[in-house]
Length: 406
Image (cartoon, rainbow, N blue to C red; front, side, top):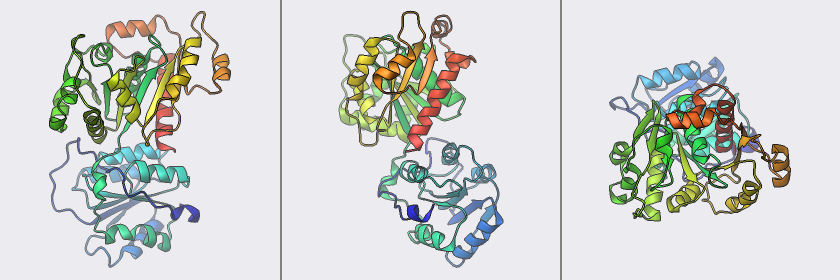
């Protein structure tokens, strides 16, 4: 980082880096440190700075980031790992790939070419990286920012046991705007195309349709988890999930209409924390009716996504949705999606944006043949190349940029 940003200190509470939900190699004796950099000059400087402080295992390899992942995948992760993000076009995605290769409790240090303070704050506050330095490295910067991590024995703060996976909650400005369609396809795209371990949650416990969109049978899994907070653990969560794709898992409820699920706000928070601890992404369908559990999802999400159609009702209801309170970790503004753009009799996109004083983050055209057919068949419309998939891809990109750039 530049001199004016190196003095930034990460907050006392930060997410853990590793992803305990994934199978890991059997743990052996953990070495203290391993480092990976792309250039000889950085390797030489690190060897010099670490000499005498890490006896017997001062190892710094000169390889690119992808090679470092292969090395880490085949070994017991040392207590401290240093990686070089130089040359990675999507460094945030690279960090998430790294999270799948290290054991829980690992201290991760990073270097790279990115000098944005927003990037620094993102990786250190939100993604579990202990410290990040911009290249070229200097002995002073390494001593001031990296060496204290070894002096502390490599142990992360106690609060680091809660991992910081991201959750986006999708809400609609009115019924029928396509909230569930957008939520399902966004989750599918992130899991299948971006290859992130993703869970899809249904905020409607009695009449949700998330499972139907993916041709999954009705399930009481979500309600069972919410109603038994004392039993909520990884095993119960895994048994309640339904597999929809290689990296996509669905948790939905289908209670009798006359039955109200008995759960507390505390159990909802515990459930959400557990989800975030086991998945890179969670996409929640909060719907338009904003049932109690849907409100919990909206409040605790890191990002809200509001789906609108080209109608004046959507424009008027946007303000009401935007004023709902959110948690302290929530992005300051929601992402806006215009669905069914260009539908006959609908408002023009330019008029809507002028009226709202906001621009849409993703626009999906009206596709009266493709989308309903995909829904009826229980297959994601985003699996087909075309304008719908392009709109979902734009939304996925916006989700990543907002989550990890500010």
